[in-house]
Image (cartoon, rainbow, N blue to C red; front, side, top):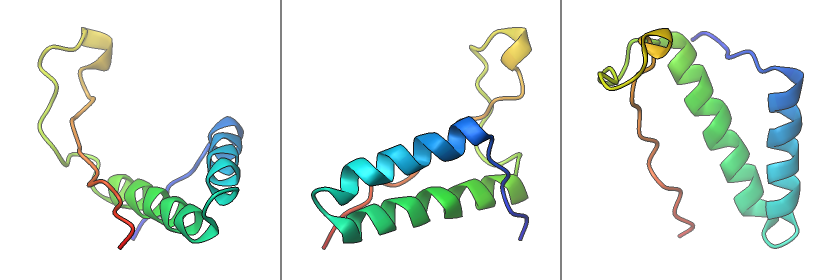
Length: 74
């Protein structure tokens, strides 16, 4: 599987999101981080997944819709 590459800004955003969640629920923060990383890797490996967005402007013609299931802490 291809590994997704994150910009420094994206890495910082992910760190901040997880730090915020960790304050209330460290286990949930780990799960959120892993879900985001797994989804990014999946999209890097399958860039054509999901239907195209026909309503987008021409400069965004390659953008596709992909819904990530909501994380449920059970």
